[in-house]
Image (cartoon, rainbow, N blue to C red; front, side, top):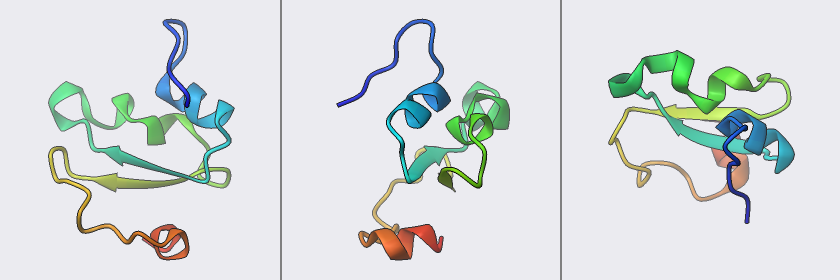
Length: 70
């Protein structure tokens, strides 16, 4: 289990967790891309799937290989 310290961004946590994939919402109501975890991680190290804010996750594949293709 990972959590964010006051001095960390969510991107810092994703890197520390060595995440393969991060599913992030588009943060439209709080400033958009600048607020997204995806904006703080290099795409060649962590695959980020961005969904519309409040869009839910039910449409995403459960299989990691399929999620990496999204």
